[in-house]
Image (cartoon, rainbow, N blue to C red; front, side, top):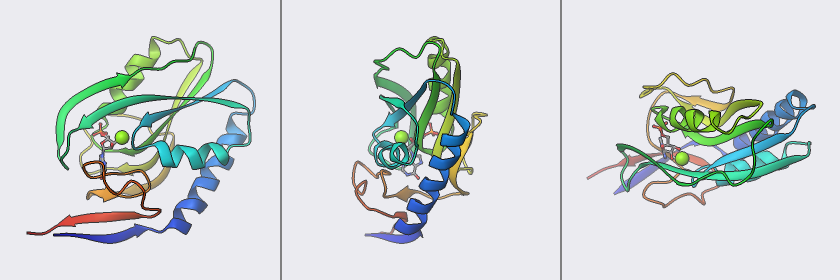
Length: 174
Ligand code: IMP
Ligand code: MG
């Protein structure tokens, strides 16, 4: 059986996304902004975030996966969809749902250097501290959590729960 406990309500998330959008709007006034989402988890957060950014911008996605159908990391990172637009000379804002070990973002940051962007920053809805292995700087953080497995608002467990409008802690019981 699974139990879920509310961690961030829909209203809390929407308010925080608007704050992040305003901050990003004020910090990227001059330049060519590309918002680069990491599929699948970031798709809901990114769709709200880009509508809270009042600037001309381009969007693209990469698809990375470090998790299989389980709540534990398989340890392996794969990119099965690469960047499709030119990033050269542009300000890239990587959008992630949750930073856990940091391996996905650390790998992506290395890959992005090869695209000669003007700058690369990271915006993650959640910064989960407990299992961090790689030293990644998350420039814009929605919420910090210490631990636990979260679902909802794009976050999944074996591809389920992404459509929940709020974020919950998932507990598995026997
Ligand atoms: P990292 O490479 O360990 O930082 O993994 C980040 C990815 O793992 C995220 O983009 C999520 O897809 C997934 N992930 C990590 N923690 C959670 C969680 O609590 N719930 C759902 N997905 C998670
Ligand atoms: Mg993800």
